[in-house]
Image 1 (cartoon, rainbow over the protein chains, first blue to last red):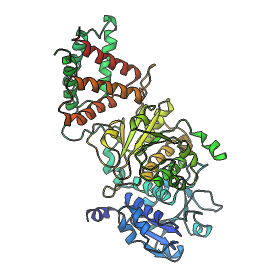
Image 2: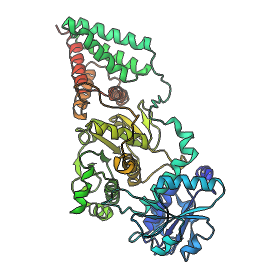
Image 3: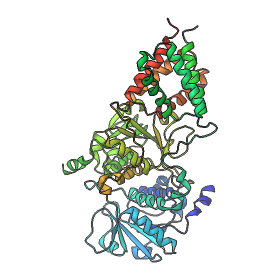
Image 4: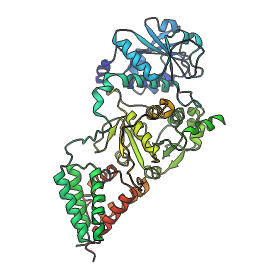
Length: 261
Length: 261
């Protein structure tokens, strides 16, 4: 399957996502989907409440079945992280612990650096209702504090996973390099049509202004320069293509012909 | 309620989230939760599939009930955006349209800057199964491309909302500690005139299309939707002000009157 082949760009060098005592199959499935959306594939479950495999997880995964099929089950958090070298614990509230507390985007950079030198990394997420208990947090090297609106800080489990995975993805070369053509000033013109050249644009504008002169719109005379500038700026800002300018010529022809018949 | 009081730090100056034809109440509720997690409060629903209010939405909102209670329902996307001045459309795949395509984090910076000068902003999200249709994308000023793993790019609706809201939150002074110098584009046109609201823009476009129908320009009939989209995208891209739209009305009046005398 093409998808399975393509996700190999990250397999083996991405963080493990470890759900500790997840309650709802839907959230496990949504977690798998969010992981695969961001190119992560290593899902580990510690004592999921319901039997596994869980049909509701598959329904919510919306096609990220590979992640669920390869998910590993563990009896304890200790076993789930035993192969890992660096473990982060996610929390929404402050814990009374002496541990580094970092934001998701800083965690992503740290994980990136660690994985780049061959370190194995994982991130712990607690149960829906209560989050990680203090013993599980204690197992971690650092805390990822997903701190958003301080007065409504409880994220859905799969949403918390997405935040961590999304920041991971944004730190990958894939996001920062290959997709960099999607920067804020990318006026991509899909397909066959090109940005119009200025000669053709000016030809259109001159034609339009001629029509507007002849219908009396550009009156009074002393206002004409200002009005022309306003009109030119409108069409200038639209970043027209060749096809757009042909369309605009058609519009002017259509509108002026309307009452000729 | 303490929560309601505290979220005021963003109320009134955050983007609207507009779900177009959402299918599942769970996703509407999860959207509300994700919004409030990130301090957003203005939820608008265009033709939700199920009856509203929807009990499943409240269950999934996990306490973000205020967002659902104050959510507004609309018959059409046009009505839902009519009070807004800048609208983004979210897509996972490329569309065959000439529009700026930006990443969520750049969109967040642009929205921040626009809102800082009093511009009203909203973000459109399509239905679970199919996303936004082309006509809805055409209503937007720019496309937010939530482009993650290219081989598994379909995000759950509420997850897509979270990505946009999370980037919004990360761009707020609340998250960054200060407003850094924002180099993204300023949508405000200097001077006394304001960016046109969508109701006035759509009124103009509808009028223009009416004139083009009556002069036979929008023929043959099966090509009409494509031609209308091209025309709407031209004027959408121009970032029109109130004054620009008055000018364009004058142009259409002038051109159509020309041969009436």
